[in-house]
Amino acid sequence: MSEITETDAAAERNARHKRAMQRKKEYIDGNIAAATIDKGLLLVLTGNGKGKSSSAFGMLARSVGHGLRCGVVQFIKGQWECGEQMLFGEHPLVEFHVMNTGFTWDTQDREGDILAAEKTWAHGARLLQDPSIDVVILDELTYMLTYGYLDKEAVLLALENRPQNQHVIVTGRNAAKELIEIADTVTELGDNKHAFYSGVKVQKGIDY
Image (cartoon, rainbow, N blue to C red; front, top):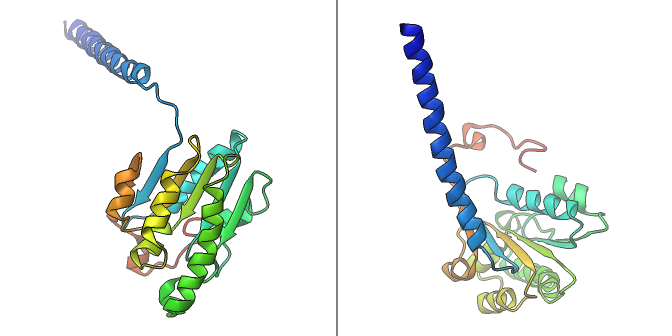
């Protein structure tokens, strides 16, 4: 008797699972059918958690895999070996530019940082006007706006007036509300726990 009951219970669980998956499929299929707009996206990856640049470069790898032409502009970073630059820096589908000043708290030179940011942004501004570039990554751009190193209005205008089908990925903490407002997708990564704050050194391949 118990064997029959267990069999019946398993069959009922399987039937409930199938009904639930059918409802989920109908919902997802409906959303896919309703998504008819084809356009370039502005994605903002922000928050205090780890993984913003990692996510952006994951999308770069995906884009290169599809044969898309890409441009990368890295602000702040550049004073140490960077895995993504080592991998993509010479790739024929990727144009790579690095501010190459290191962290602002290391330079402690506001005027020098502003000049470096403006020089680096010139590459970004050019990429945002080039319809042959499919994907642009502006890594750590948010800091340049937060610190006032770049003209926020000029940056926002360049983002809004880029080629229609060009995708742009912006990373960095404390994204400006104006940037978030014009973005299509915004992801905020939380800082629940990080090995660094437990005294663990940054790790090659994981942190840089």
